[in-house]
Image 1 (cartoon, rainbow, N blue to C red):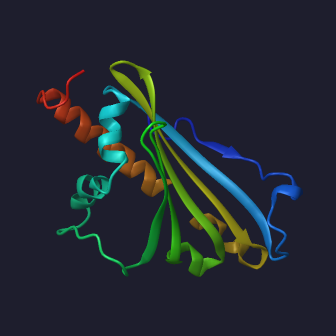
Image 2: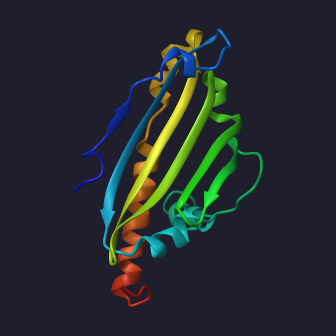
Amino acid sequence: MEIGDKLQFQAPPPASAVSPVATIKTWGSVSTEMEVDVPATEAWKLYGTVDLKKVTAPKYLAKVEIVEGSYFKEKFTKVDNEKLVKETEETERGHLDYGFTLYRIRFECIPKTKDSCITRTTIEYTIKEEALDNIGKATITGSVNIMKDVAAYLIKQKNNCLIKS
């Protein structure tokens, strides 16, 4: 399966599930997944840590430093080493500058067989009604690139016998 073959868009929840703040009118999520021929626990060794950025960022940046401040700040809101789920939320700048009141990215490693897994990325967001023109900024493209880079890295490690299946 190719990345992007299975994009899922989720409808907004019922009005009773939306924040009572009147300016928040739209909620949504988008997700994609891909199969990777390594065990979920091996994929999680990257997805579950900040090492994920060390694998993906060198392709785009000459030097990788995890610092506060840059384009946006995010915080880890969930790291579940049993369910293999990690969530981050933007806390300053980034999508918040465009009227989003929540921008959450979730990475999951789902066991498929003992030697393979499904990696899934989901973006959840809320956006103010007056900022709906910016809804196109809620894109999964960056996460898809991360998934591709991590899959390639993991397969390379497996082929070099650094990952045991």
